[in-house]
Image (cartoon, rainbow, N blue to C red; front, side, top):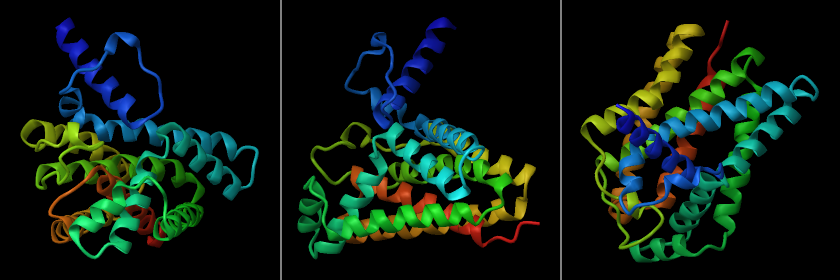
Length: 258
């Protein structure tokens, strides 16, 4: 039992180290297949990041105006993740916006420099997060953050279940095997539990609407990636996470909570 718990904890800490800047104990170490085993815990990392962002929002809102507190919360989420997914969004949008062939898209994505498409995408994404969260009732903002960070990461990691990794090497190569069976179920539980809780506590119709939007978005993203590059890369997973997070905020902002 102790070995089982240690193995679970180690996989979680590996995922935490990969997707955040949070330091982990030295005893965790690193093995070649660590990320493959840790993939199912990626949505749980979203829960941690979302809880941190929500905590910063709740604390800052006691001192600052609403939008200032939200900006501080967004800054906190970027700092704790090292802008991991935002970087993927920028690179992917640069690639798809500037490349007309599969090879050119992948070449542009591989370039660490940010282009016009990526810069515009980042600016608009942050503005949209700020305004959609500001449009929510204050009592729902923290819950919406936690819900969005977890569910969006499940949508991203679910692409591993059906798509192929298209590079011979890259930052997503360690998790490039197919995610399925029990691992996919575990990821779904971690990723969708906060959305279920949101529906139970606040509004179940809004949660169902979000789930429907996420399913549709996931289908569209998968089809687009297969059409343009034949599968996924690490950058496209970051793009998928960011688009899903925005979709959740937009759905909540459009909902008429009473």
